[in-house]
Image 1 (cartoon, rainbow, N blue to C red):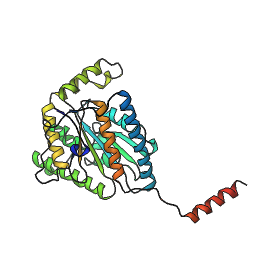
Image 2: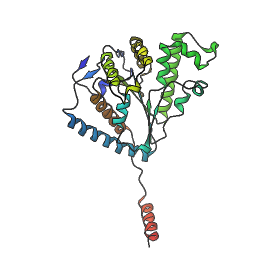
Image 3: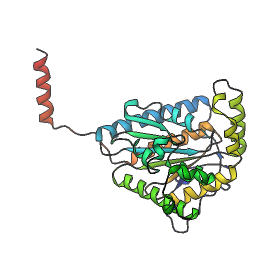
Image 4: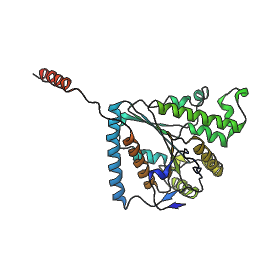
Length: 297
């Protein structure tokens, strides 16, 4: 499904408006009109956006009141890695960190399901990027409920399946609300790609010696559950989109467009934060200047 134009507001889904439509994967576009006229125009726009983002993050780092949690959720080959690489390439690497979450390890399974994500939260003044996130605990496990046993939850505490997901959604919303109230807004990007486009990208991986390793037969078996995953994503987004921590639904069949959209949204969010460089008292500044001048004699 293709849409001619877009604004950030069109892609922001918080589910808070009375009578607001629910997110439907079939009714939301996977591609829109290009926001760039040429390769050179894309380069210029992305350079300007990443430079602006670096300036804003520098201010946030100096201000030391806010931090951002930026998470990416999507099906395989939707563009998570490439978006992270291009959108955040201009940032000072000492002020942000990227964590890629894969299948939980044995140590993770000995803790509650949010534990391994708590450990990777950013500090104030920094941006923490989650490549996949705690939402996997309401997606993959929904498609493969047998894996729930691996989490070693006492059987008497596991409710009926429908209730289990409702409780996990509630836990996640509380977790994100807690972060927001402490100065850590959660920026949630869902990269929406068409099944046919994803299939072509997977085929392209097999033709690229540097990317062949990314694809296995088990990945293709997982792809057989496409419709189930779309249904799961719809419920995840509809149940966890809030005014303070909305989802941003990104048309992702065009990678370059996808990256420009994400960069624009990041700049808008950073510009909306009440952050500024701390101001040093003039007398104190003059005192420090005199100390430096004395040291240099």
